[in-house]
Length: 198
Ligand code: ADP
Ligand code: MG
Image 1 (cartoon, rainbow, N blue to C red):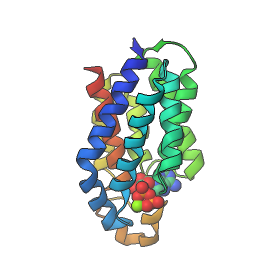
Image 2: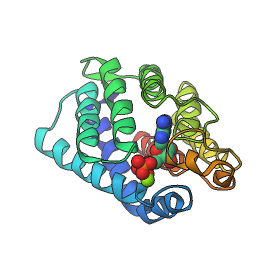
Image 3: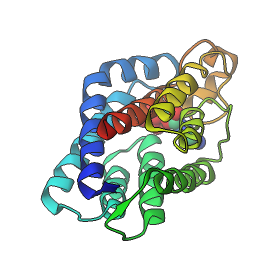
């Protein structure tokens, strides 16, 4: 079973991965965006770490809703409200039980990704974070490793896509041939989840 401690470990791992990969995320965003995705997420997840340490939420749902709220209030770019909504909605779906299992988390993440899709108006194939999040949430029904692999594959599969949402969509055809920064950071999130589960 996955308890609050597990979810705090996941968020700490995500913060560390984002910090480690911030330059790469910003580089990807400089090709088809405005070169701030790495710094946006680094700031956001550092704030998440701070607030989780201070408030020490005691249920899985409370960890994710607090993390989501913090991302929304600290990240200015599109990704802040989108990731914030993902975590908040996922946390809400987990309710207030002291521990949950992988299947429950998979179902909650599906609700979370649907909320991201509603907020941003994007669907699979639009070259956004959803191209990693949707297959990963699906594959989590199978295993943590399958989810991480699906997120990686989803991020890689954004390369040939034409961006239909967000800043990259302003480039039209010129967005083709570049990996989406948000799908790349979503893959980091699912790698951190798989690591927390080891
Ligand atoms: P901004 O685009 O405001 O500079 P970021 O650079 O932090 O914000 O994040 C960009 C990422 O956000 C994109 O790579 C994409 O994955 C994601 N994104 C942008 N718009 C949307 C949307 N409408 N739906 C889902 N994801 C989106
Ligand atoms: Mg940007």
